Length: 109
Image 1 (cartoon, rainbow, N blue to C red):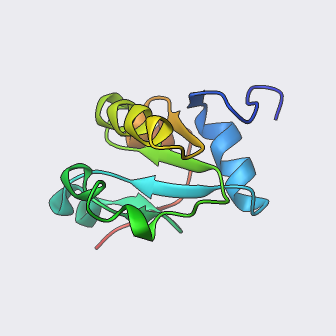
Image 2: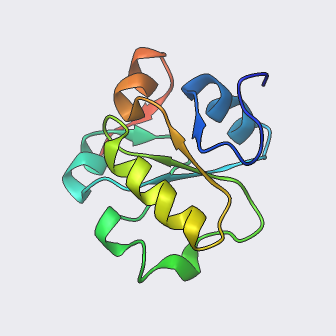
């Protein structure tokens, strides 16, 4: 995982999937429910962007959090907020668009 160092604020899809597969990361999907239902990453945890603040007790305090949305804009905002709150968080560059282009597994429904 040459492209990612703990403390970085962005991570590629390839590095995120490798770290998550190795048990070294937690994937947080911050999209709306209809977007989640249309397709989300296997093993992702869903907390819509507007709910992250009130549901922060559901986030791991001792794991790297990889934040994903559709293209990376909302997840970048959530990443910044989580980092300010003391969480180790990184934005997945390109979001679910990049995830699907990379051929990563997507669960529908």
